[in-house]
Image 1 (cartoon, rainbow, N blue to C red):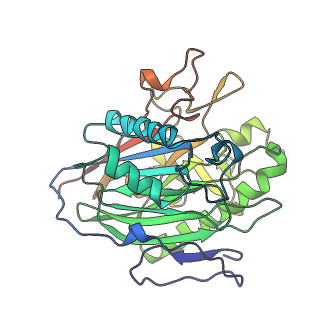
Image 2 (image 1 turned 120 degrees about the horizontal axis):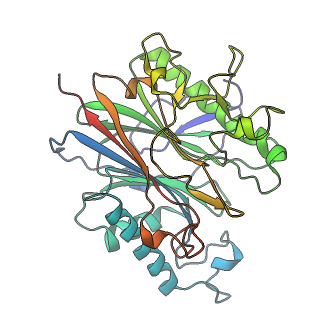
Length: 355
């Protein structure tokens, strides 16, 4: 597990796993000063993963993209509040009462999460939140949840020619069942798919190593990977296997594969299956063709990936997955409506098995 750093993002003391000699500091996560509330007895738990596309506040910090600068008149408080209002509407409409856990990507800071909760998600139980944004970066990622948070860490992939975004690891309590969630936003393909793939591979290797650690410590650990991986579920096939990819189909993976091995077959949950294979709901159900529109075609670069333990009882069991393709989230051309985001949200539900 060379070349990564783990750092707690909670204000509560948790063990640090330092795996890199270079210390990378992130701002303190004020929203991680969690309050505790008794959970209800609901038997289902829902998660929403959404790249909200550049959620900037109404204050200039000097790190914003130029088109979101207040000083040059290209961004305003009115536009900021409208962006929050739109996001709040999507969260409200995605499922009754909103999802229990929201993973959000391309957010400027923790303040945008607090404003979202206070102004557009009041009385919904969202009292725990945090954001992780690297120093001098324009955007980061974070979460909002009504679930108790047991621990929170950040992991920093090593750059391979391009800057890397952190991976946020959050452990939440789902009705007495701990679930480890990884929130990710891998390197984009802006500079070319092959040129940037080494960065996505590095992030996937970090994630794979961390999952291996968790499963060695507790073979029954339930793990959920969420986020914009900037890689299609069939990326390996798309490039004809010409170079290593961050996501590798189970059918071609070998013992030497150190990235994320994915399967579209729930049979991977069988007791004798490789515990490190992650199940992807993409294209296995009537879920829609994709969540991101690129050059007139849908892509599957947003993901929820499930460990085998989330596919079989006891404890939490996968129930449903869907792309949140609400009518107003689609433009006249058929792709995502840019007034909301250039991505569509993903929603997944788990049910609690009764002993």
